[in-house]
Image (cartoon, rainbow, N blue to C red):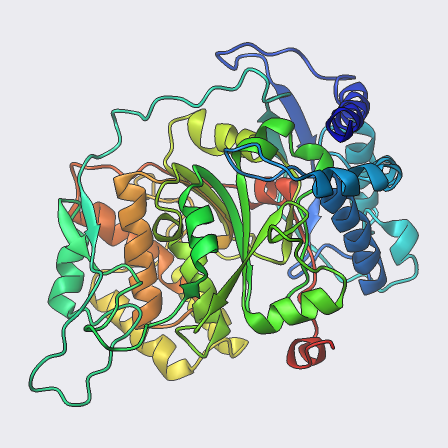
Length: 498
């Protein structure tokens, strides 16, 4: 009975979406020639989409309540408890009411209203943010995104033969050197400069890539997961993931109406948190259910954090998804300050499958040269200046040059990424790049934008016959599919709620 009612509620939501979305959309065929054009010329704020905190909290309560009452377990196995169905039935009215006010990516009216508000310098939530100060925004151009209308006929392509083929193995354990009494095991291992240099060669090799344990009898190097959680994520074939460490952000579920039933059944949505963050989320009414879910998110608690700097801890799921999800073919990373607003399968089709890429990341909205990024990090005191200078000097000595936008032979459209949203196919070259990037972050600073271009250029330089198919797309495309929010205030981070 509950299953029937749940399916009926989904169909009702789907019909509402279809009515809005099909007004100006063409049907599409399997070769993707007929697609939907979504265009808007919005402007971007350096930090957030303009809105006040009251609006943010209201938005989260509505969306999280809706998703929590209407989501199926996001795994390849479609299993649900009668308790979950009862919760969905009980909250069906909440779902339908919340859906009336949500902004769907395919809703032409919502898009046009948003464009109008942006042109006039106001947030799309003007009704809630009325009277709030508006900061100046940077103009970043117009994006045309031809998103497929539906996942109904979407088929995952066979892995392209053009992708480089080689075997990667990972260092699992290190032994203590006999002569080094001060030696201690480290999560990233102890990689020499010679080993670092050789690791950039795309060949069959064993490489340091996090999760390196010490000799038998030594304590774990960290990022420990419960056995059930490790088993769950090891079964995922497509993963959407994020993390909140150090109580830095609120939990924001993906926009319910844009996540199709197909994705809810076949995509894992995993949020990594520490115990302090879990305590705060639970006190705010976002307690995981008996299966460990809050809405679409499977909450995975990480114990024994390998770094005291939460920024470094966050780089583990961000840069090493192929280690955390060993069975996954694809993964989508988004920072916890973002809310996903597009179906994950459509994201994979648009950024990877359509043109045969294996890695996708957006360019920075304002800066394109590493020299500029270094200066900005020091200006804003993002990290220790001496360490930044050491890293920068190391890269220059190894051949890193200023970005030249007029260079017709440049390998990237920008040398600075906006790394809050990353789409990957877990191919050998993609996995190798992720390991190399993580090792640079671990060796120098957690400011990953400083090491991205160097890692990419060195990988390409050392493997002239093996191309890495990276799609660096426009930042305005990222903003269309992931909404940006405030981080928590420093006071809220330091004081867990009881």
